[in-house]
Length: 111
Image (cartoon, rainbow, N blue to C red; front, side, top):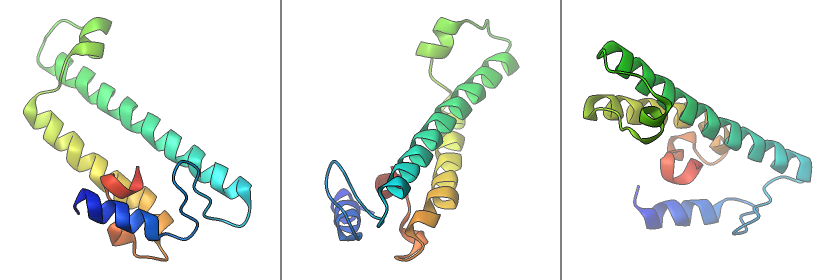
């Protein structure tokens, strides 16, 4: 999906308002959706960091907080993490798009 298609798709959702979307009748539900999105982002970061730590340990490399903060995963690990993140987005955030087609949930529209 191109950036324009993602933007057009998002803007077509009921209640879309840039900066402060309101999708549901009750504001609390919108806040709960925001919480779920934030938790998903935190989980994604934690999973990436854990995978990076596991890769470092498996390679027998020295482990340091600085390396975990600044180092980069191998190309193979990054590709796997990208695939896992996309599957997570479709599996979890796809439910938010159930009425308009959960197949549209991807990294550009769900985050």
